[in-house]
Image (cartoon, rainbow over all chains, first blue to last red):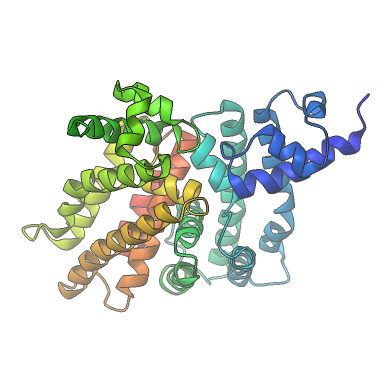
Length: 192
Length: 192
């Protein structure tokens, strides 16, 4: 019976290494090295690198939960929650010097055509993420803070896409200009 | 002196293979195999796989020029040009069964932190792409088709980001829903 903390060490190192170097930019050995465990132990815990990819994605999404719960904080007006949420994501990106990007976006680009397992998890995660944004927009519409003529579902999808594209852009530009423009256009021109 | 058409065959196969499999998802051998040239010939033409990455990116951007020139067609009202342009990109994506995505977006995610050479090219390409969209929005503002209160530069950046994020999303979802929502939100809610 393998020690459970070895699996945990591999998952934590997997999130870190896959986020930093991309799925195809590192090997199992890089991940077990980062975890400080023997390479041979990997396959006691994961059937494949792909299976670790799914576990890392789940962990990343789970870690993102605290920020995401900002969107449900009923003590704050819904539009303020949405703004705080994106500001908090922006702070995370700045803290990483606009490297890495979002693991969910990175895997979408790199693995959607390469791994059915990962793609299926991405579908579920992106749908849940969209719904969380959509609920917040709907609440803002009920309070009159956002025009009720807007289709909350479509808008949520486009805001999430715009955010993912913005994360991609700042990864190239290595400055926050595109994030500043995202915040201005979304909160002044679209929702304002 | 190497035959010039070998270089050309490698560039064409490079665009195709790097687009389909990602930069780190294929090797030089895969590219020379696809080009039908000996692996040894690669380094007569390119200093590194990275150098081919830049050449493939330049070729992809050059190939995108015909679609991009839609944005400058002064016989068509500017907002119609912008819509036709995104519809034409959407048709390309659909024709590829929502696989592959955009090579510019893919390289932004995969290589911005890995290759300074590629990142520098991406910066130039994304800036030029943004300017082309911005000019079209400015013209639409001059004709009164788009509110002049919108910041054309910021809006162009956000539209391009939203498009890149949409391409990422349909790669996961394998259907056109996110593209339909992008078109509706952009042309009805934002520019409408």
